[in-house]
Amino acid sequence: MSQQQPPPAQSGSLNELVGDPDALRVRSTVPCDIQRAWDFVTVPGWFVNDGALRDHVLTTPEPGRHHVQDPVHGEFLFEDLDVVPPTQYVFRGSHTGGETQAPATIVTFSLRELTPPDRGTEIVITETGFAGLGLDAEASRAAVDENVRAWVLELKLAADALR
Image (cartoon, rainbow, N blue to C red):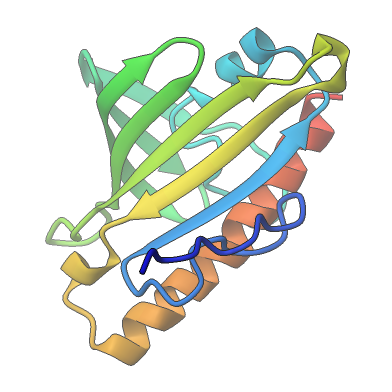
């Protein structure tokens, strides 16, 4: 008996991996070509905010490692894991404020230009690794749910910025 996949979520609104305590997937369409979407989503930490995009202090101490300082949320470290322009960007990200480095999740941005191209670009965000954060099952589920809400907001901000 094969497992059925959950139905696709509405644009940027639901977690497609319902019930998975370790992962989430959300998607949306942005109103631009794939190159412009790629240039946007590969800026480390663009999604670190509180509902409005803002500039960050960004340093790259070595290729593929990015330090982001947000004036509200603190310091983050992002490490490129797989970069396939302009269709896939995979990174590990962690909040590094405080004395110890927090465990990290892995985020994948997958991009697909719609046809005809003037229909925009679909961005699919998959985030995994919640089970490795050392949380109990309830807290892990809450972290997944909170990140789904956050990514939906970030995709809306991206769509607005790319108009």
